[in-house]
Amino acid sequence: MKLEKKDQCECRIIHDDKVEEARHRALDDEATDELCQTFKALGDASRLKIMWALEHQEMCVCDLAAFLGITESAVSHQLRLLRTLRLVKNRREGTILYYRLADDHVSELVRIALEHISEPR
Amino acid sequence: MKLEKKDQCECRIIHDDKVEEARHRALDDEATDELCQTFKALGDASRLKIMWALEHQEMCVCDLAAFLGITESAVSHQLRLLRTLRLVKNRREGTILYYRLADDHVSELVRIALEHISEPR
DNA sequence: TTATTATATGAGCATATACTCAGATAATAG
DNA sequence: CTATTATCTGAGTATATGCTCATATAATAA
Image (cartoon, rainbow over all chains, first blue to last red):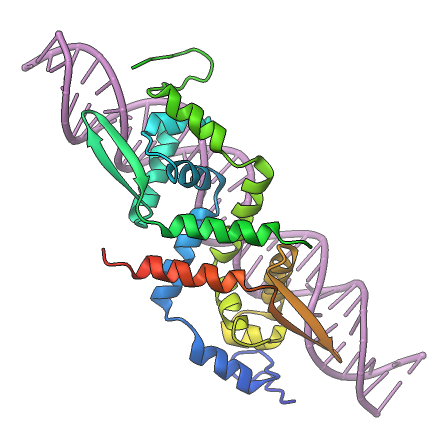
């Protein structure tokens, strides 16, 4: 057991090897950030409901607003975020924009997370 | 096209059928909330780094603090949250608590999310 | 052209949350 | 027993974020 109190980081380190190994295996900052943003996007009730709905059918902004019971503005803000993260895409038909999921990963993510919360405790 | 302006919900509905279908398919509130919290847990850099590190080896609080460069208190707060969501478990060995992932779902979630962000844009 | 409609955007506000600090527990060591 | 050590917890704070409102675009309709 090695104590490096008040050295540089003010942090005690009990297992140097484990800390070193963790640092070695760590994802780079960019990947970490992108992963974070992706999970964070799914970690909000409104956005998760949007994604879950779009997984089944394409929908426009005002339908989603009616479905969620929030303003179209709020939906639009969230869709912009989801678009930025390439989680949804849209197509125009006249004045209406139909949104859909960008790829199949989301369905898989939700499916696995559902498995997790369904586990016996 | 049907407009129900200033009716009850103040929301225009363009496609009644789609909204109805979305409502029919929607997850119940409890499942939605649990899913949200799970994703939200992974949607923070500190927690994601913790999970990624624990996916490979068990670690104690002060090692994680040294690895992340934050206080042990901060790590402990985050671990409590992860424990509550049954994402990590721990075992005691003397005075030290070793944390590890609770199950394999997390690895899968991260793997799929990695695939998503790695897609050509 | 002008009017309408669906969506997007910026500002402002209220809540949520991630951190640090100080102090409390819980287990072991002497 | 007391001292030490690893972890936990509550409070306070600063930042992040999700919403609404008002307004701006962009495409179509007349």
